[in-house]
Length: 203
Picture (cartoon, one colour):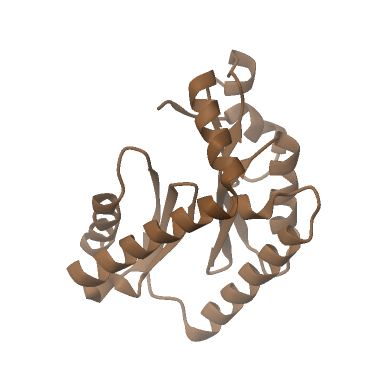
């Protein structure tokens, strides 16, 4: 599978360098696969739930010391690994354990860091941010909210999922950015397209 980071779209957004990565799936066969995932809705979410349960179980069995440090943003088989770890060995171990559960059909992105665990107050704020963003997406008629997962860590919002159009993707990002207490938005969004041209892929 060829995954292209869409630098052209990023430049159009005209925001900070840390803002979102848009992933474009090129080719009719791959785009068709993405469209099937996209249309599964709740069925797709159940599959993601099983994957997340399997990852959590594997980490808890193999290295329980890092279990409570790992957070996941997961949708349609795309896994974003988040978490704050006490050292580099622990950080690498967490990502390795996630990859041991996933397979070639999954895409794993590493957003982990070496730093102190969030405090109880920070966790409360993060949970509140996530809840408000999920609510805004659920009530936005321009968004198929079941196609996205949202996780927040220390005020940084992570979004992964599948957008049916650039417009929908931009609406999702806007909803996240205007939410109070959000420091930054990092998004891994699969954009369903029939083909990728040089002008849209940034290649």
